[in-house]
Amino acid sequence: MIHYNKKAISEMEKLKRTAFVNSLSGFKSLNLIATQNNNGITNLAIFNSVVHIGANPALMGFVVRPDSVERHTLANIRKSGFYTINHVSNKFYEKAHQTSARYRDEISEFDAVGLTPIYKNNFFAPFVEESNIQIGLKLKEIVSIKINQTYLVIGEIADVYFTETCLMKAGNLDLELAETICGTALNGYHKTKLIKRLNYAKPKFIFD
Image (cartoon, rainbow, N blue to C red; front, top):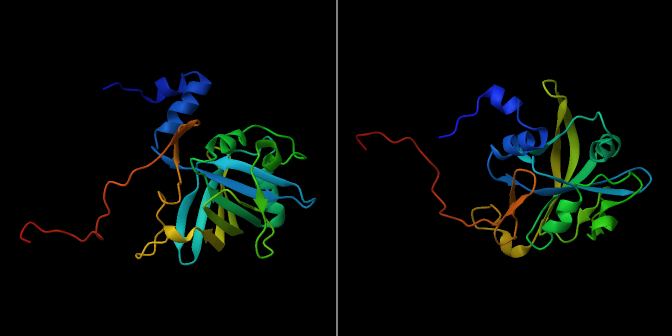
């Protein structure tokens, strides 16, 4: 096997190092996070760092890079306290990818890439109409990660919208039926295939 130590990684060319380290955590979720500023201008950005935080209360988090440059998503969430997380599907991943471009604050990525904002039940932030799983969240906490000046944004789930066929008897959503895809590094997009669903694991003993 090839071996890279800390020194070898730090000496890699910047873009290659970013891609390499970003791929080490394996397949990641892909989501579009939608916000709106106080002037009514919407913002949409793709993230591969969304994670489950807890089920009671229902919390989700995502990591935002340092705000040494303007971060419209973070700025809008700080001011409004609301945002939506929308699963990326294989039907619009190319448009979703384009939201990673640095558009000016007065330009809505919805308009720039051709996706559709939709407002539901007076929720302040828009959802992505094309997404089959849409989640509305209220900001609960922003945690500063001092080691690299990033932020963990934690929100409580207020609303979830999904296609009816996705809900399974066990309570979970079938992400393949929702056409949710995942990503690797910064530009890899993948479909998934279920291998098997296993029962809840309990300790086994050699005399069982």
